[in-house]
Length: 398
Image (cartoon, rainbow, N blue to C red; front, side, top):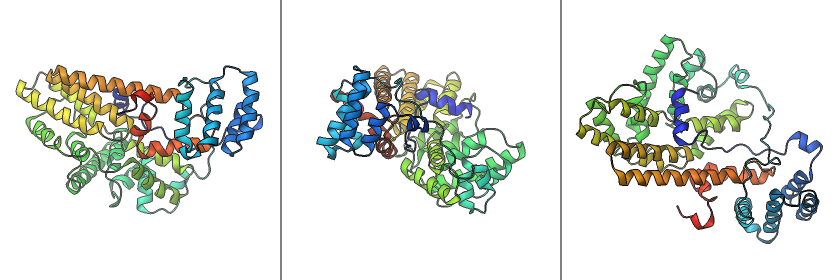
């Protein structure tokens, strides 16, 4: 990952962001010699609630204070008495009911093993006969190489979500292409950015990318750039396409290629379309501009940053929410506005605490595939709303 993109994640909260992943069955090792915990999960997945309770009885005899057993027991009871809740809501209620224990370091909830290939690798798939649009999507999931770069930058598909240009920018910034090809690709990229920005005049992201992509992070803002920042900061939307639409677009084309693990590749590409370098570039160039702008210009810049951060923070992904709030905090600092600085700081701390609550429940690590899929579906649809569902009941209002 390019340093600018790593910095973006640091602005938010380490490796934070959409974390959905295809639901899988318990690992092969656990299937060969399943513990009472895994057997209880298997029975719950199969709808055998009596069998799950029997296995939990055994587990409690072995580990009387085990919180995983207590949660599963409460989840079994809710699946029996209130099946209309659905898997996700029943899990959250069960977790709340038993006191919201921290499961992120649970020895029973292990990370999934790397999934086994189910078909040809991206490199093998590349050698097949593919349409231009399939090749474009596949290339964005692969490491930079001259032929793949041409598939990305020489023909951006008309029906592709415009946010995939963010993934194309990241591809170019990996700096692994020959200099001449990088230069030609950047020209093509900027031409496409200009066209898509005109086609989607409400998109702040596209216009900001067109302004900032490829600029020196240590360069102060010029008067023209400041004027353009002010103009684009007034636009109503950060991005145009929902995350789920990005994922479905990528998945449809990747499945058509026959590549192995198309869901994982599609998910990774959709996430990369959210991780724009714009917030980091704005922060770094703002710092570089501090002694180069007049007080009036600094005021204009700070107000533009606040508006941009506010729009980013309104999006549905956790990384955008946190990065947007971080940018608002930076703007308030530059403006020397203590009230707005307190507002942004409190919101950022609140969201980081909610993120910690969400992770402590480890909702994607329980070896119950239907439960995992319910968590994935909710996150894909609106990750912020999904995360907020894990707040303590008294703090549930956003």
